[in-house]
Image (cartoon, rainbow, N blue to C red; front, top):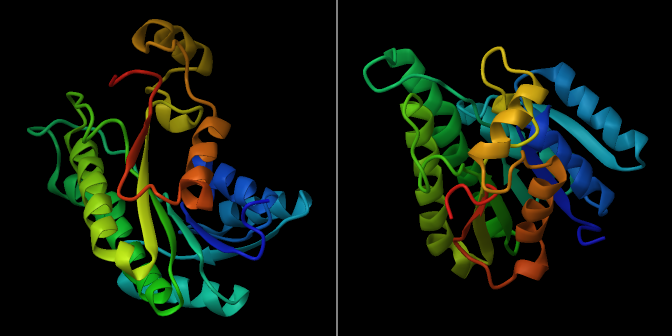
Amino acid sequence: MRFVNQVVLVTGGGSGIGRAAALAFAAEGAAVAVAGRSPEPLAHTVKLVESAGGTASPVVADVTREDDVAAMVDSVVTRHGGLHVAFNNAGTFVPGGVADLAADEWSRALSVNLTGTWLSMKHEIAHMRAHGGGTIVNTASNLGAHARLPGIAAYVTSKAAVSALTRNAALEHIADGIRINAVSPGPVDTPMSLRPGETPADRAARLRTALPIGRVATLDEVTSAVLWLASPESGFTVGHDLVLDGGATA
């Protein structure tokens, strides 16, 4: 119960890693606000948290819009009385190589993955700096700062930038009592790791030889790292990008 009396904000909380993290934070005592663009998935996450005995609320927001992000943080503080932890997990996967990407697809990848993370941190930090500090964890990727892959230029670029932004922000704000780190997952047991037309069984067969560990990551394996970085147990960890990819970039 590392997060009793803590308020946690999870962006991209309507599915996948975000939903799993919301459930994990709530299971350890946090009041969790889940944010995203679509109300129905957020409502389902809240229902799952409440069914397990936890406390959660939805916040509809587009992290690429600063007015939305400012209102998101304000509503969390108003509803729950503060903001102690933020997990900036909202992201999108945009395929396409450098010469094949349309300009709007390039912009979409950077707007959601990079600008959305920056705007979220900007307003989270403003509150935390005025209220004694906090912790922030951002979702980057093992594809970006740690490895490259042909055919996903915008995604790789945006996630590499999230890693650099995280580390720079960590240096800027540790003196304010705000610890900032990132996680960089490889393939995780979510639809995002499925190739077009691929089934989970197909993915399992592919990863048996494609990854040193021979399998996809479970959601629990990722969320346990997120919670560790957000907790006092990692109190001396500042500006770290924790790679969780089964040895792919070892």
